[in-house]
Each structure stands twice: as structure tokens, then as C-alpha cells.
Amino acid sequence: MSKAMAALLPDGRLHLQHGPIDILAEAFGQSEAIRAGHARAAARFATILAELVAELPALRSEAAAVEGVVARRMAKAVAPFRPTFITPMAAVAGAVAEEVLAALAGPGLTRAYVNNGGDIALWLAPGERLTCALAASSMDRVTVASGDPVRGIATSGWRGRSFSLGIADAVTVVARTAAMADAAATMVANAVDLDHPGIQRRPARKVQCESDLGERLVTVAVPVLSPQDRTLALMAGLRVAETFRARGLIEGAALFLQGEMRATSALALEKGTASG
Image (cartoon, rainbow, N blue to C red; front, side):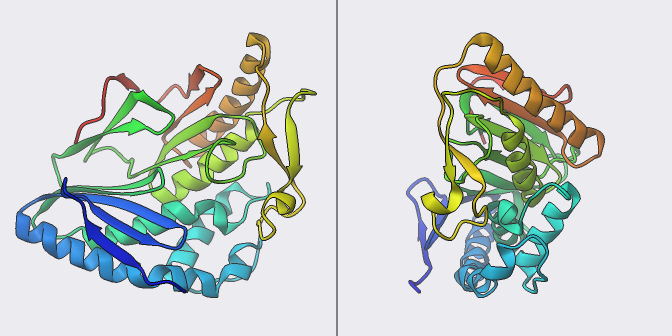
């Protein structure tokens, strides 16, 4: 297995990369505290991939027991969404972001975030806030304050790096943890769907032989849809998102499909560019 890499970028962000994991992290506060946080985050990150690889068969299963701290966080995040099919892998990016953030955060910092391929874990000292652009739309942003319950933001969809059973270009979810947001975004994105002869799907294992989705059909192409079809698909996903919000699993969601967007009633989006 290759060695984990850690590098400080010119803008002060920390870049962590190991195999498929590619993270950007940023901390705000006293310079000494930032340096110490970077060192802790890099040290913790160095072992995470090996820990996950050791438990991959269980993590790709619906019900197998797992042992590692990140693996257990993944399993805990997906459990509330069953009996619908979901494996702990649906929460891997968010769970890794949380683990790195836990190492990064510490005394002397005011704010910090860890962005693992668009799945983001947030840390805020009392009285602080952070504004993040949504991965699906740089013009839409959400501000999280220290008093808000949100500490995780995640995005999923058929155009992303993970497979989807649905046709959403993207679904962004805000939740109490990044792992929970990751799992929920997967489930809501799967629900943005409709029957249409132009939608192309293939068994997941024929696209990626080791996919945890097995023979389930994943979306590989979506034609230009009529306004009516876009509405049907988005509303199907929105109903699922509102159900999750009513159950306390998420705080809000924004669903994107071919230039149209729907959002849960509790999600307040702002227009503009992201800021720290």
C-alpha cells in the first residue's frame, strides 16, 4: 500500500492524500494551534486507509460486524436507514472526514473543516460560523453557526464519484454529523428517480467489480428530461428527504436535476460565493 501524503498548500490549507482518499482541511485561529492541529490530523490520517482496508468485506456487507473506530461510525450512520438496502460504505467519506477533524480540532482554534471529496465535517468554537458553497451549485451556499445542530455536509448523485441508483445530478444534505449526512445524501439521491426509457443503467459490478452494490442497477446516463419528468423525479426524492428530516436524521437537503432544484422546508440557502 502506498504511503499517506500530507502537504501544506500555499493558501494555508492542509492536503492529505492516500489511495482514493483526497482531503482538504483548513483551520482558523492561533498560528501555533493551527500547526499543532495539522500535525495531529496528518498523524491520524496516516493509518485510516489501512484500518478500512482490513475490514472491507464487512464494510461492503449490510449486516457484518465491524471493529475499527471509523468503521463503527460508518455502521452507526447507515443503521437508521434500514431496512432499505445500504452498507456502511455509504458513509465512508463523511466518517473519515469526522475522524480527521477530531484530530485537527483543539485549543487555540476558532473554526475548522475537513473536506473529503465534497463530504465535509465542521468544527466551530462558541460564537463562530462558517459559510460553505454547495458542491452542486457554487451560487448556493449555507451558513452554519456554532449554535446550529449541523456539523456535516455531504453530496451524492449519479454524476459524482460514487454510484447512484437514482438520476439526481446531486443531492446535498446537512446533518448533525458528516457520516450521517453522507449516508442520507446517498439515500435521497437514490430516491430521485422515475421510469424513463432513455435512462441507462448497468449492474454496479460490471462498472466496478468490487462495488458493494453488487448486481443492483446504477445510473450511467440520463437524457434531457421534460419539465414534468424532472418535477416527478425531484418530488420523489424530496418526499424521502422530508421523511428523514421529520425523523431527525437530517437537518435539510437540496436536490438538483438538470438545472432545477428543490429543497426541504428547513434548509435556508443563500446566493453568493463561499467565504470562510
